[in-house]
Structure formats: structure tokens, C-alpha cells
Image 1 (cartoon, rainbow, N blue to C red):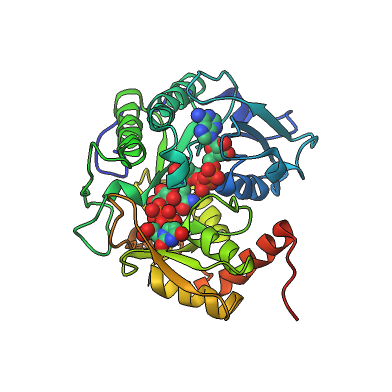
Image 2: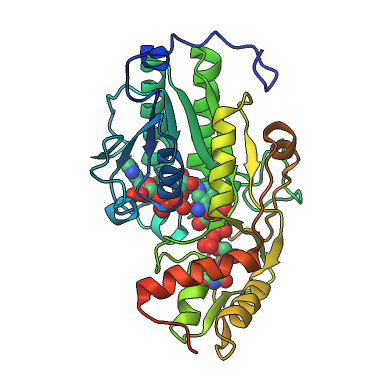
Length: 340
Ligand SMILES: NC(=O)c1ccc[n+]([C@@H]2O[C@H](COP(=O)([O-])OP(=O)(O)OC[C@H]3O[C@@H](n4cnc5c(N)ncnc54)[C@H](O)[C@@H]3O)[C@@H](O)[C@H]2O)c1
Ligand SMILES: O=C(O)[C@H]1O[C@H](OP(=O)(O)OP(=O)(O)OC[C@H]2O[C@@H](n3ccc(=O)[nH]c3=O)[C@H](O)[C@@H]2O)[C@H](O)[C@@H](O)[C@@H]1O
């Protein structure tokens, strides 16, 4: 029986690499989207284990080689320019499947490509997992809950999602990706893991990527007004990236398929977030309100009971402790030192 209570086929034979004695690396791990924000932090953590060999496949749409520069040329590391909408032939034991633009302005930029990335990309990675007997983890999203009518969101909530809206390429795309994961699990015995990630922030986010934490920090550093989108009472729960990476690795290494919410339950309105950024980074900055975009979820907070019980995981870094780490990174990249 699988951990979700459904019977499954036994998994296909794992790659012989898993038990190979004479390889330098005991575990060969593919990270799709590994040149992006969360992916590159995940790669840093995986590379710390000398038994891991890490392959990153990325098309650099929102990621960059710069995020991985410390590993390029390392004998246990390999970087491939690859678009996951095309099949990939590599021999690996684990697949962390992250490839997908995550910021709303980027995923809405080419919505057809976003849905292809989610559907065909996940199908291709599942095909790879099936061929080589690898375990595969999908980074799904709290956006599968849409504009949630249940609060906080538990994993058994099916969501309130607009199937034809401007966000659908992403949230419906991830919902199909989750369906594909479970169908491959039930039909082919693939070992799957699904993380439902809630808003994550930290160093290396694209400075102008449009997400709220990166926007506010860049605006505060540049002395520009913080743009709170109306009504400003909408809430999000922000998880620091090191906590997120820890949760993803525990999920991959554990025995539960998920889906499991991984996020920080500390919940803030966007006005409260702006006040925090103002107070911590630039007390002179103005806060203004601007138009919002369609279908913006009004509230979002993870119930992390499952992550606590099944993974022994909970976030350690509070928002007010994480924001200064991100400020430091943004100041460095923008070339604006903190005023004395
Ligand atoms: N950061 C968050 O708050 C958050 C929340 C929920 C879910 N997620 C999920 O986590 C994953 C990583 O998010 P992130 O914040 O690091 O985003 P990101 O945009 O920084 O990283 C995504 C990476 O995927 C790559 N990519 C995009 N399309 C691709 C394709 N077709 N083929 C190959 N590579 C491709 C990009 O170049 C980039 O390096 C995504 O799957 C996202 O949906 C993130
Ligand atoms: O956690 C998740 O599951 C999802 O969260 C985010 O989506 P979203 O919450 O809409 O992220 P933001 O674009 O950062 O917006 C958060 C809130 O801030 C507001 N906002 C955004 C930008 C800004 O300048 N000002 C502002 O008030 C938005 O209206 C929204 O209410 C991510 O970008 C998705 O990739 C991810 O899957």
C-alpha cells in the first residue's frame, strides 16, 4: 500500500547505480530548474554531500548560470542546457523536478509555454523516472488551492481554481502535473513525492521578477515607493529558502508520497509585509496602493501538520529574521550599501 492509502504496482527496478560499489558517487541526482532560485539553493545543499553527483537541466528562462557558478567545473556537477518539454536521456537515481517559471509575471508572459512546461515537462520527467527506476519529486504549489475557501489550507482540500483565467496556465498546469505523478505511481509503480510549496523568498531571487518580497526589498533599497496591490488585506505566508530546501530533501528521503504542504504558517497581509520592509530596510520609503491583477488569491496559509508528523519538519526562520539576509544579497547585487 502507498502512503496515501491506494494500492500500487511495485516500482520498476532501480538503476544499478544505486547499489554500485565502485562509483565515486553513490547517488546521481537530476535537478530540473536547478539554475533558478530554489533549485540553486537545493543544488548547494545536495553538493555538500560528497556521495551525491548532481546534474542540472535548465533552459535559463528565469534561471541563470550565475546562480551555480560555484559548482561549474566541479567533478561531481554537470550543467545541461535543456528544455524539459523535450525528452531527456540521463541515468539518475533521483529527480527533483522544479523546472517551471514561478513568478506570475513570467508564467503569464508565455502561458502556452508554461502549461507545456508543466504538462509535457512532467510527462517527460516521469518517463525518465520510469525508464531508469528513479524516485521523482515534483515542486507543486499552494496555487493548486486557487482562491481558497478553506483556511488554513490542508492537503485534502481540493481547491477553488479558475480553469480559464490568466493564472490557469500555472495553477491548472500544476494540478495536471500532480495528476500525472499519481497516475504514473498507480499505473507504473513509480516512486513519487509531491511538495506543495507556499511563497518562498531569499537571496538569489531575480531582482525584478515581480514577486512581492523581491519587489518590496528592491523598491526599499532604490528609495522607490512600495507598491501594495489592492486591497492590501490579501494574505500570504512566507518561507525562507533554507527551510524550504530542508523540507524538500526530507520529503525526497522519507516514505510518504505527499502531497505535503511545505511553507511557513506565519501569515501577513501585503500591507503588513510592506510595513515590515519599511521598518527594517528604509523607514523613509512611501507605501502606495496600485491596481491588482485578476484572480489574485485573497488568503493563503499552510496547515503543516502533515509535514511536522511525517517529515519531522517545520520552518525555523521567521520573516523578520529572513528579510535582512535577502536585503544583504540585493544590496550587493544592486551596488547600494546600507546607509550608516
Ligand atoms: N518560489 C516560490 O514561492 C514557489 C512557490 C510554489 C511553487 N514553486 C515551484 O518551485 C519551483 C522553482 O521555483 P523558483 O521560485 O525557484 O522559480 P525560478 O523561476 O527561479 O526557477 C525556475 C527554473 O526553471 C527553469 N525553467 C523554466 N522553464 C523551463 C523549461 N521548460 N525547461 C527547463 N527549465 C525551465 C528556469 O530557467 C529556472 O531556472 C517551480 O516549479 C515553482 O513552480 C515556487
Ligand atoms: O506560493 C505559491 O504557491 C505561489 O506563490 C507566488 O504567487 P503569488 O502568491 O501570487 O506571489 P506574488 O506575485 O509574490 O504576490 C503575492 C501578493 O503580493 C501582492 N503584490 C505583488 C507584487 C507587488 O509589487 N505588490 C503586491 O502587493 C499580490 O497582489 C499578491 O497578493 C509564486 O510566484 C508562485 O510561483 C507560487 O507558486
